[in-house]
Length: 187
Image (cartoon, rainbow, N blue to C red; front, side, top):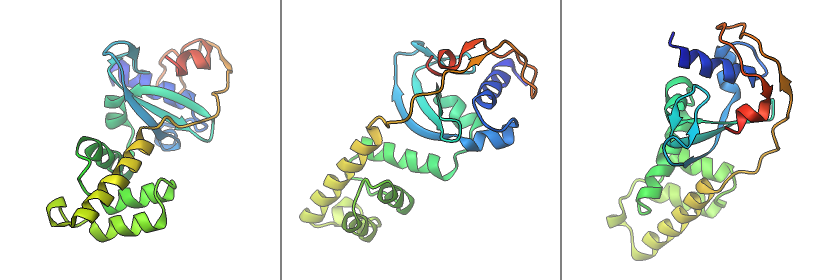
């Protein structure tokens, strides 16, 4: 296994409650994402990044900023990844219809109300050209709400500042970083 993969895995395990990769990766959820100047930040694996994904572990109250490549490559978010892709599609083309999982996600997170959910579900199979003018404007209006919520930074508790002594990971023997957890989490 390449060193950068081991480093990424060890850092995620270190910030997780469980101590195995198969369990630890499911503790994390995508909180937010944003772009930065390429190389302005580094992923936990050590590579320079330009697209940052903020992961949050509600169990340990830890957050970490990693590269989108590592998220896609190592963390299997399955359905949630597809939903995030749909939200990015709507960002690029506000007239597109959201799919059912994305509509339900927006509703469950209280981004849209029940009427808006029902409207989107009833029109999601139709391209914009088959909608009335009023339906078109309503879809665009609701999509703007969803995109705004998707882009909004999420409020989370501050990460705990435990001190981690230099040690080797019990899973892959990679040397773990030293110092405050926030030094690692916020890089």
